[in-house]
Structures are given as C-alpha cells and as structure tokens.
Length: 316
Ligand code: NDP
Image (cartoon, rainbow, N blue to C red; front, side, top):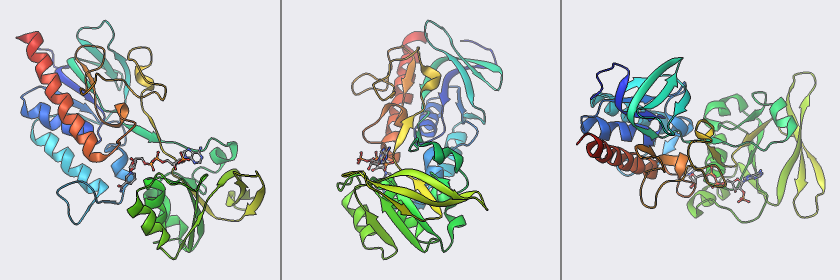
C-alpha cells in the first residue's frame, strides 16, 4: 500500500448523487476515499425544487436538502471531501492514476468519474449577450427576479415543464415554447403545465433572436419563429428560461477515454468500468438515457463496488 498522504484507494470526481453514493459505498468498504466536489457542489439537484420521484420521500424533498443529506452520509463513512475543480487527469498508461486539483497532485489506485452533465443553451449570439440579464437556464436560481413578468420557457422535456410550473409562482404569465407538437416530457408533467392557468403552450416555435431594452440592457422580447413556415413574429417578454437538455462534462477526459457521438463516456455493458482498468464512470456522465437521480445514485453504488473488487484484484 502507498503511505503517501495524497494517495487514495479511490478518487471520486463529482459531487452529484452518483459521486456521493460512490463515496458512501467506498467509505463503508474501508477504502481511503476522496471526493473532488468542484466549486459548486451537489450537481444538478442543487437547482431542482421538489424531488418527487426518489423512492423514500413520499412528500418530496428539496433538491439541495437531499444533496446535503447525501454529503453528510459520505462524510460519516470517512470520505475526504475537497471543494476544488479537477484541472488535469492522467489515466491512460498511468499507475497510480494522477489527478491535479487546485495545483496539487493526488494519486489513486482507482478513479470514479461522476462529473455529470451541464445545461445546454440555444447557441444563438444574442443569448450570450443577455445571459444573466433576462436569459437563464435555472428557474430555481433566477425565478424570483421575474415577479409579475411575462417569461418564456424553451423546451419540451420534463425540465421545461418543471421550470414552467415553478415560474408561475413569480411570473404573471409563462409561455412554454417548443419546436414540435410532441413532447418528451412525461404525461403527468405535461398535464400539470396544461392545467396551470398561467401557462400557455406554443408549439412549432423556436427563438430566432433575443432583443433587449437599450435603456436597461435587459431582455425585452424575442423574434419567435414558426418551425413549419419559418415566419417570424415579435414576442415581447422579460425573461427566457432555456430548458433544452444537457451535455456531459467530459472535456477533461478527451483523448484518454472513449466517448459516444454525444460525448458521453462509454462503459462496459451492465458495468461502470471504462476501457481503462481501475477507472469507472457513474451517473449522467455515462448515461444519456435515464438521467435520473435514482439511476445516478445506483450507478455510483455499482462503481464503488466495482472499484472495491478491482482493488482486491490488484492488492490481493
Ligand atoms: P430532454 O432531453 O428530455 O428534453 C429536452 C427538450 O429540449 C426536448 O423537448 C428537445 O426538443 C428540446 N430541445 C433540445 N435542443 C433544442 C434546441 N436547440 N432548440 C429548441 N429545443 C430544443 O431534457 P430534460 O432536461 O427536459 O430532461 C432530462 C432528463 O431528466 C429526462 O429523463 C427527464 O425525465 C428528467 N427530469 C425529470 C424531472 C422530474 O421527474 N421531476 C424533472 C426534470 C428532468 P425535441 O423534443 O424536439 O428533441
């Protein structure tokens, strides 16, 4: 065994449900474990209001409260939690694996990648210009600023439905804008949005451009485009919430681990093992299909068990 202070049995990168669950299992397996939590710990649930579908919480729990519980549980079983972004990883042909965070190098005999995914934006130039001045990807964070205002939510998935419903607590009106008339969202979520008198649903629409009020520099409206005939109308609103899915956080692993065409890490069938022995991937970073808190937590558990078995195989 390596006695170095900066050496671990398991390094976990990421602090969402996958990362903390892996830490709970690794800690309980007596593995010397560190979690690099990033700067804003807790992952996507930190910007979720009610978590209604995690088994065991019949009355729902707030996303941030849930993450705090997972974090405490990881700490209870001995995981060292470090609030720092990982800047560099050396996984390929490296034994032990090397991780640099905050300018310091850490080594480990196994690595669990649980870096999750990040909200996508529309990619139109004016969106960048008005980010933080009317354009947001987080209703929980920014909804409060839109009291009695008219806002748009873009997207047709569960996130868009959830954001639209949440925003009706503040906004006078929410226009849900979707590019098709078929929704990815679950029927229960669509039903809630449809039954909310403050929500209007606009199908076959996209945002072609965002414009601002020159006096305040904040969003004043959008050019709303019909996806069938490309016609454009002026649509005055004060806020735009983008809820069009996520991209996996895998830039750090480019050139070291295989990814699919959407940059999700590839793991072995029914396993969290990557192509590098001792390196595992759990949660949204390797799952473009389920992307649920419960499945992320489940795969964090799998990764820790696989890491434990791997360590046994190399240390005997
Ligand atoms: P999804 O991938 O499910 O939906 C993304 C939506 O955005 C789609 O309707 C898509 O349109 C649209 N879209 C994508 N790109 C663009 C674009 N450039 N312009 C306009 N529209 C675009 O992502 P979500 O974040 O909604 O959900 C992810 C996962 O998280 C899902 O599994 C969901 O069930 C889960 N979730 C569960 C919640 C809950 O249970 N409380 C809450 C939130 C999420 P199109 O349909 O045309 O592709």
